[in-house]
Length: 300
Ligand SMILES: NC(=O)C1=CN([C@@H]2O[C@H](COP(=O)(O)OP(=O)(O)OC[C@H]3O[C@@H](n4cnc5c(N)ncnc54)[C@H](OP(=O)(O)O)[C@@H]3O)[C@@H](O)[C@H]2O)C=CC1
Ligand SMILES: Nc1nc(=O)c2c([nH]1)NC[C@@H]1CN(c3ccc(C(=O)N[C@@H](CCC(=O)O)C(=O)O)cc3)C=[N+]21
Image (cartoon, rainbow, N blue to C red):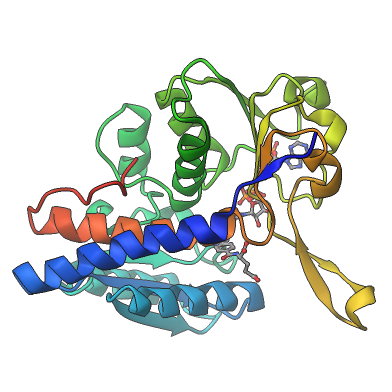
């Protein structure tokens, strides 16, 4: 069997088109332009690429983009002060603080200082609690993008066995919450899980968010399963020339694609959907801030 490739890049472009159409209506009918502020502390080359892509796509869908690049030695007080200013700024509807932060900054404290209504990452404790209890919240972008692709591919997810490998606050845990909300039977595996291959083989939906290049092999995959590869790993690619790198996921694509029914590629899978969902969340935050109806087809 050879899997259907789920084209995240094309799907993301269609999400951005929907966002752009609703942004232009917001401008025309209400004179409102959604604004997204992205805060980057320190100089991580990979983070800089994402931040640049986010800024470019934010402008392409007609929103305002505010980039704040702070030096690595920024103090917690300075960062909290910037967040307080963004919280109070009516032109800013969404705030994203790029993670990880330099070690001397307390990530929980920083994230929880963001106004939950502007927390387009969905990482604030109140959004986490709202999601877990089935209330309206901001939903983390990466799991939201995965859910959109899964719903598109399967229709209803009810009753399917879902296995999420990874239990981070930014991917694994919120992914498990969303799948549970769609009535999947959810198992969360992690570094202490016993018989992980056997558990993965039971999955109708297998989501890999581990951060280990090509860890999940074809023989871990149930024939016909849908495999969502969240991993973004930069590995050396000497075949492309000295010092060159290439991106691979947490799934061994070649062997998994032989067994799976459908699979997302890396690059071109979950990554582009993450950014599209960030824009969707910014539009949602802007609509809610102005007591306007929820954007159509863009919330979970
Ligand atoms: N496409 C996108 O938009 C995004 C991609 N990513 C990528 O997704 C991946 C995961 O990111 P993130 O969740 O932040 O990573 P974290 O490092 O925070 O979490 C990794 C998780 O994987 C588990 N794990 C590690 N090693 C193993 C193993 N050998 N077997 C089973 N489980 C293991 C860890 O278990 P334990 O808890 O026991 O330590 C942990 O729960 C990374 O490659 C990251 O780059 C992340 C965010 C967005
Ligand atoms: N507060 C916060 N929120 C995040 O959502 C967040 C974060 N911090 N820190 C880092 C991770 C990672 N992340 C990615 C986003 C897009 C791509 C992406 O567009 N990837 C392209 C390839 C890009 C490339 O070539 O490097 C693809 O997969 O096709 C990847 C990874 C968001 N993250």
